[in-house]
Image (cartoon, rainbow, N blue to C red; front, side):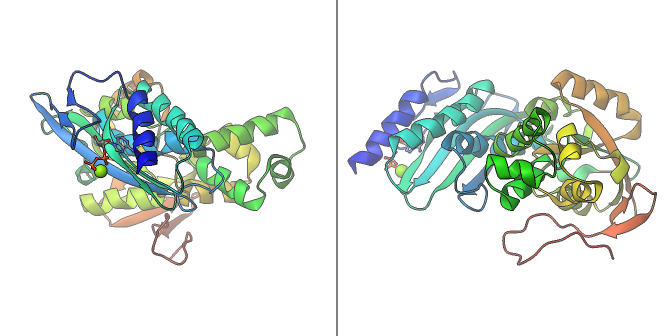
Length: 343
Ligand code: ADP
Ligand code: MG
């Protein structure tokens, strides 16, 4: 199919400017890559499907950015340095304008982290993008979910709940003007700016790659928050055979989120909303100043939100100090419903 080769050629041209460790990139039956001595190869893959992982009307450049960002976020959570990626593109038609816009977003992020696109596959079908990323971590230094110890502090990077808030606002009232009305705010520039920022958090998340690398020697466990804090922290406590207590009052909250939603809604987004791609990690209590330094080095805020306990399960302390048990309630593809529930 000629159109397929045209598309691949368009991609290949944009992927030029390779890394020295790419022995052979796009164009043969497979790529040849050289892993540096002393490094473990860390591999992760994630699929974004239209209507499931992004609204169907999302601009192509955002889809390109996000399809790589969610994958780099997984490498960040392992403490890995990104190196290479592969792109499996399923698109409904050979639309080169759409592809060019997609590649604008994709390569904007790839260039930022010096990730080389070394191969992939191009097929026709309902829009779906699978990216596979490869990164390096010195032998045995990767951050796992299973290392949290009783007494460790629980930390979160950046702010939580922004992406879920942006998605909810979209669902409630797609379109700029009705967005503004739905927020219950008047039409000041500040409100527009805040919604723009929330949308940016949804469409162009920042993978916390530099922070993940800075945490290699410090964090005892780490995960990226893709499915919601309770769900993802739940994975850490399960893998580590421990429990956790977190405090709603300590949750890092963007100005945009607190302007756009009341307290109860914001807390729901922060505990159960997904798509923020922040790092949730644990560290020895004595290492707090090292964590602060790692955040400063990476240029991202880090906030302590709780601590690890021996008792299994997750406990959430509300702003009045009242504690309740929480069930992990992040996004589940095969579940019919999900909600925060107190037991
Ligand atoms: P084959 O039939 O041998 O699998 P393809 O025609 O699918 O070969 O691909 C030819 C080359 O183009 C390969 O190097 C492949 O990795 C690369 N390629 C195909 N699609 C993409 C894509 N979407 N992104 C990057 N590289 C791609
Ligand atoms: Mg192929």
